[in-house]
Length: 218
Image (tube, rainbow, N blue to C red; front, side, top):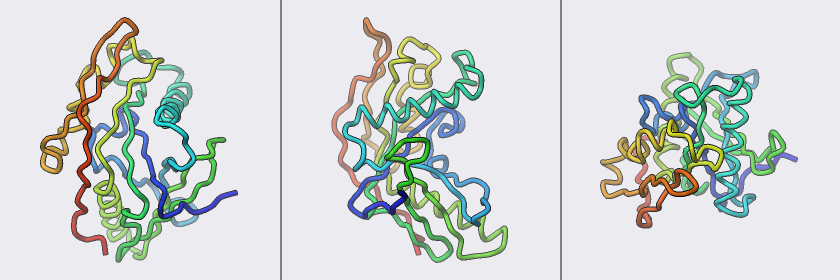
């Protein structure tokens, strides 16, 4: 049964190439790019409730499943730019998310979609009516939400650890950090290394800086 996320929970967003990597660089603009308005007059995205996921391995597994399903829907594209790759996730505390603005309101509902008990429906409702004002509200809400999220936790799935076309292999972990040089100037997510079992991530030093929200949350 669907229920709202608790304020003390954390929301994760899986980063799948290429949707979240315009120009091969991950950006805040791509993290919550709410799409078309549906029949309920809201725009919807999805996330994961971390209170219902036991380990980080399970978070990555959920992201890998998303990419695998998208590849299956597309007839299993060959390695390269047409293939979907899970590259990690970003997370934020629900109580730090700017869910209500002067022209929008976001609701977070654990709905178990697709048989995943941790699946969260992220629904954007509008407090304005015109197309122009809604477009502005959609962009603002997406950027404000994204600014509350921590840096990416990178990952290369086991099913792709011998794929030299993986975005994190081709572009390096800089593709997850370049857009955030001003916010996190010393951010180091680690290094992509090749071992006897293929490509993997050698973690960088811990990062604990809390992101600063831009003005305009309403």
